[in-house]
Amino acid sequence: MTRGTVLIVDDDRDQVKKLAETLRHEYEHVLTIATPGRIREILGRKEVDVVIMETNYRSEVRNGNEGL
Image (tube, rainbow, N blue to C red; front, side, top):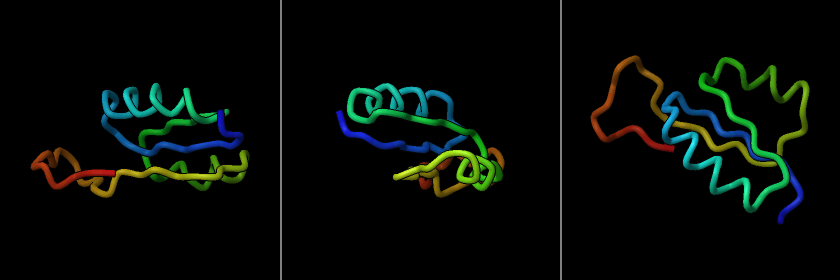
C-alpha cells in the first residue's frame, strides 16, 4: 500500500465509488467530493498528494466527452 492521500472530484456517484474502491487497495487515504468548489476547503484541512478530477462540470451534460 502506498502512503499518501488521493482526492477524487466527480459528481457521478457510480464513477466515484468504483474509482475509490480501486484506489483504497493502493493508497492509505482516499477522499471524495462531488463539486470542485470544495477543493480549497479540503486542501486547507488535509495534505493531498494526488487530485483526480472530472473535466466537465456543466449541468446535465452526458455526451461522452466528460472524463477524469
